[in-house]
Image (cartoon, rainbow, N blue to C red):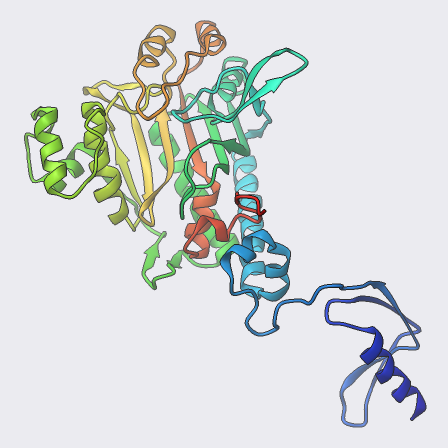
Length: 399
């Protein structure tokens, strides 16, 4: 048939894989063999692909190319599309869950005069209109607490944070956090909130409470979650019931013998925390609330009344990494100022006087929690790297 030859010639000469076309005069019919077929009488190219698409069955094999040209990865990989659709569904579910619990979503500044709320190296920029240095925020915390002072008792924000630090399988300098604060609650209330949130995601998005990791290990998110005190975990790992009474030199010696690298200039509590981060945390695959951390690690939390060396806090560890820290928030402005002088990590955060001024007007007792959205999505999708669930991860420019 002449029109068939004409169509074949048109496709061979004019069309390439990846072209986007518009058709007209369409109607569906069945062939004699029973196949549903579209009858096309008009065809027009509306976008021409000048470069070839990835090979159909294998997709992109170069990881660097996957991340630089994510659009090609999305075109060629159904698995990649599934992961990012799931990420979107997880965030939507989190919003629904918190909205149903009477929390209000808010937005706070990304550009801040003081980079507070965490111990991290910030990105800096010059604010031309104000002629002064500003920072990309490293945490959402301090502005959200101001809202508790203002009378908004349940608030949350899902937003970007920026930390000018390393890149790894679990870290990207630009990442997404959920922070949520509830007046007249505490870290125990946050335990209930995060369990409910994760169970809602399992029910609504995944349809199961069992997660299979990239290595085949199964994580059980249903039922009760384990709770363990930080001190007990350290003592069990070191085999030393008197560990916290040992000198810094003795602790450094133990770390050296155990093959744990620790900068000897670090503070005593940081030496101990290196053991937790490098030896204990990676083993916490099933959901575990690690509670009562040393007070020096988190200056924004309340001191435990039964042990003044610790704070009312938990770190929820799943899949061998921290997913969500939560505190009974410190609301005494005098104690808060004192605790801000003691800060772990490379960067000692500056005292945010505006935040302390807000506390002096009276902040209700509260529970607060941060959830690393990227790490949560890693857990729930079972991927191996944070780069697999960030559409456009940070990469060094080519050329």
